[in-house]
Image 1 (tube, chains in turn yellow, red):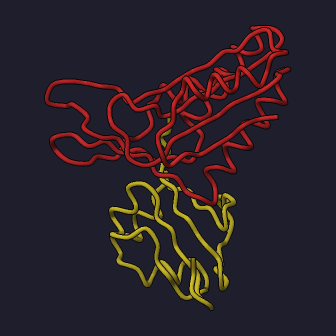
Image 2 (cartoon, each protein chain N blue to C red):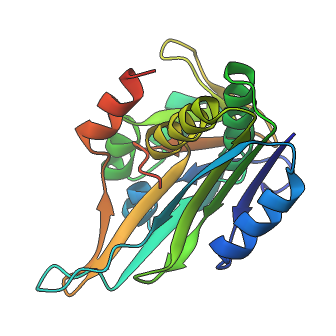
Amino acid sequence: MSEAGGATLVFLGRLEDIAGMGELAVAPGPLEHVLAALDPVLAVELLGERVRMALNGALVGDNDAVVLAAGDELAFLPPVSGG
Amino acid sequence: MADVRLLGEGFSPSDELAAFTAAHPEAGGIVSFLGQVRAEGGPHAVEALELKQYAAMTLPGMEALAAATRARWALDGLLILHRYGVMQAGDPIVLVAAAARHRRNAFAAADFAMDHLKSQSWFWKREKTAKGWRWIEPRPDDHRDLARW
């Protein structure tokens, strides 16, 4: 859950290990600004070709511009492996 | 109707299947699949398996899969149970059961639901061996399985 006024990044699967945390509160704004404020090693992983994004539970299209608003939750989803 | 649950604790596949069967006396056939944590010996033995889920997407995705399965085959009932959390060898991971008037629909629906659970549901898996925890990437087979449908 994000704090009032902030947005939340959620790191799933191996991305949680790379980030060292499952969630991170960030200031709202365009995704490129949010990523620029992160550890570059993490930012590169989050932008990986096989990592998909979901904004508030809905998948983001490859060409969609993401701008985080207060209360938004943006999840980074590496390839799944269920069952 | 479909019974779809995401479970953080262990469950009894036989109890669940007995309840599902009792709830569908009109069905002529029930097909079920149980997936469990594989027990392996040797240096690569898996000591534990962990499945992580994402609350905003995992259960909603399973419910959408159940709806798609029911729309495709004439079923009397559909059961989809999936674990998350840490599991040991022999623990049940997934139970799918389809009840139908005729067996072909039940076989196909259970097969379809399992292929999609394996490769298209929002779960991330890691295994613990003597070397520590390791994230498991999807196998090419999982995507080939999906192409059957």
